[in-house]
Image 1: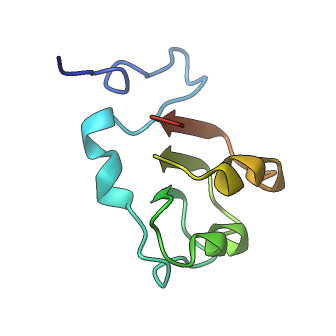
Image 2 (image 1 turned 90 degrees about the vertical axis):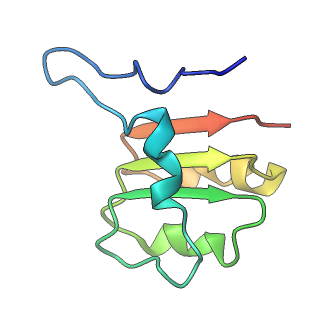
Amino acid sequence: MIHHFGDMLEGRDDYWAIVPGGERFRYMLSGAQANKNLKIATVGADTPLWERIFECEGLEELTLHLPSKEQIAALPKLKCLERLRITKSK
């Protein structure tokens, strides 16, 4: 079965929008890519230097794909986050 849960997540009246599910891996970080101007990111438990997302002052959208418990626990630190997607959390 194929899940398209992210593909339909677009708000109406400019309330919010999210990157379609199939495109979320285009924003996968390698750790070194994180810069302060980054607006969209995808990280997972195996992403090296994932903590650098906290240095991204303009981060609006985050996808946690197979996140670690540490990554889930750190979410409150992301004060400016507007959109969050968590896929397959353990």
